[in-house]
Amino acid sequence: MSAPAAPMTPRWWFAPVPLARIAVFRTIAYLFIPVDVFLTTAWVRAHADVPTEWYAPLLVGRILHLPSPTHTLVLVVQWALVLAAVAAATGRAPRLLGAAVFLLYAEWMVIAMSYGKVDHDRIAFLVALAVLPTIGRARFRDRRLSESAGWAMAAVFVTVMLTYFLAAWAKVRFGGWDWPTGSTLTRAVVRRGTPLSDWTLDVPGLLPAAQWLMLILEFAAPLMLLVRSDRARIALALFLIGFHVMTYAGVQIIFLPHCIAILSILPWERLTARSGRRPAQSRASSSSAAL
Image (cartoon, rainbow, N blue to C red):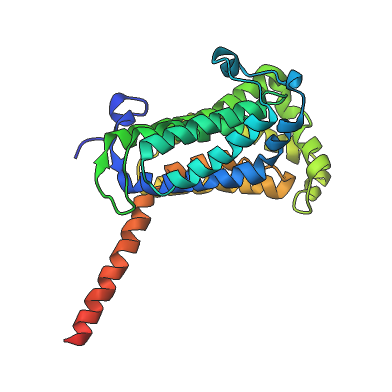
């Protein structure tokens, strides 16, 4: 048995994974898009009714000379994206429909982020949409191993890691080392706190300590690439999702697209293998009873 590949080496990037993992994650990712369009980014629809003069395209929009978002364009992109995502979730024409979903979602993000703040919680999900069409067909019980699937999941994994690491780098770059001793979390709790977090305002030093812990963990994010076993992957995903759930419970902020990207870490093939064994076991039991 060969030793595990070191992170970021060619053997690590192309370590094959079961296609069943792709089938499950792809379905989750594509079915999330209608939720995102009509719930978490429903405000993008309002850009259809603002003057085009307010549109300040992102760099990618300027390079590609993307059109200004008129009322018609925003509605067409919105509904074409939703329909393409639902169709892609069926697993049919994965390359064609997957590419269409990626391009439409990228345009949806350009429309969303070209009027002010740019959210960093979208990049890992956007990378996932970009690499999924490169894999091709995959079924829920497909146990075949694929290097292209391994590369795609590694790309998403690295982007998830970089989301945390670069967030810490941005904190220090723009806020300096005074950021962890500042009042960022205090302001967040004052403005958006819940009964689950209001009590932290009464504990001296707790929130600054939490900021230091957050910064340390974000800078340590590259260590997550060392996970090897399925159990370690499950534990890592639960830890990351748990952090975002806790953040939402405390200050009502959650990065849903990033959470969906985190799900790519999980060994979904184990779930489909279990569901596939149950009918077989039931048939075997029925045959024994008949005899």
